[in-house]
Image (cartoon, rainbow, N blue to C red; front, side, top):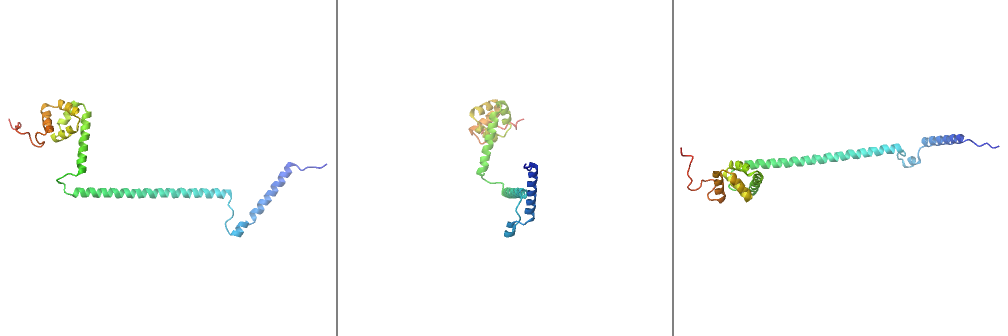
Length: 191
């Protein structure tokens, strides 16, 4: 009777052969290393470590580039702020009494009176009249000119008769805002 080898014995023989083959291949130099003079072939672990190192190097380079961009943006912002500060200092040093106003300043004043007109129109007429009467006549006139007619009429109706008359005269341009109306009496001088 022929006896067959057991499966365990065959597995052990194959494992022993594989161990001997691995030992021989580890002990002998690679032909690529000998012929090319290069580094030994890379294992999976070595490839994984190398890949992680490359990824880390790329991340460090990306962070460095981002920091460089931030630094450039900071320098540009500082330059703009310095130029703005220099321009303001030169404008302050320039003569303050200019006979004509710049177009930008006139536009800013127009916008300012437009904003005030919108604010007073949004208020209740009685409240707006009390506040508007406290302003200079010139400002009252400019604000009233920017208002819608109905809103201005409602606010004028809530003002005192004297205040409403002054504002109405200023709006009608019967007299310059800075001087009293012709023929007006000085009631403050009377006892």
